[in-house]
Length: 355
Image (cartoon, rainbow, N blue to C red; front, top):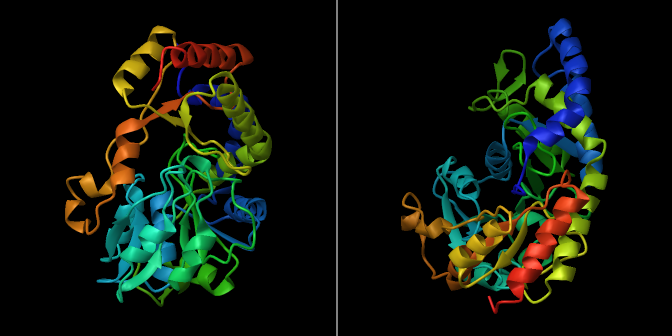
């Protein structure tokens, strides 16, 4: 069975170099906020095309701290897409703010600027576009809202070009991401030096200097060992993104009649996703051909039991995506034979459509 993802393959590639570096970290006695993290922050910020990077404990904490840094607080509203992973919403709730789900574009599954504009009120303090599956959202279309834009780039490592005019981009280093760690991790990347300074303080109990706390905050630090692993992975991230693009292109070329999510030149294909009106039968057919699949994501935010009270506007396109999306294998360690197996299975299944 061709898996949707297999983290063991990447671990084998990096384990020897990581274990050597881990011994150096342990021998140094500097396990938090040390030189490995600083080097990774500089390296990833440069890769992302922005001036400052602040490593934190997860992608959700990156969103939480960036939103707080732009002034979001209790009672404020933050517009988010209804079709996204729950951490986009939970980061808003962690500040005592209100996530306001808005509908997505039918072709891209990313936040629809018109729907976001309709959801804006006098209490709207920020908007969070999600670059879902690694495809850039329409950030320029959201600029007319007149509120800070904090990007959820958890799945978009390498997909975003500089000069977008947003407040910050927030990345996740969860193990399955394009740049995945050996545990949770995240980063706030920004061109705003003042915002970066605020986030640095907030990630360490609000400390401006040792034992001097200028804000009430908790701990959101990224460890030196995690930073070591991520720095190793950063070295070939661009090449690995290109591999994802080539795999996705092969699938589309072999099965063009399937309902693929709209492509984009900068798409990094964290996930390769299509839509089908008969998901169970489609997945069963691929499984019979030896291809595993997954669903990202089956339940919109506004339909989640914990978040239903936040729904103000119907989001039919988000609901349709949740009901129809299917993820097929698209990770860089897939062999050429495995890619061909998936592409052949997709072509054969497509031939008995429509889906």
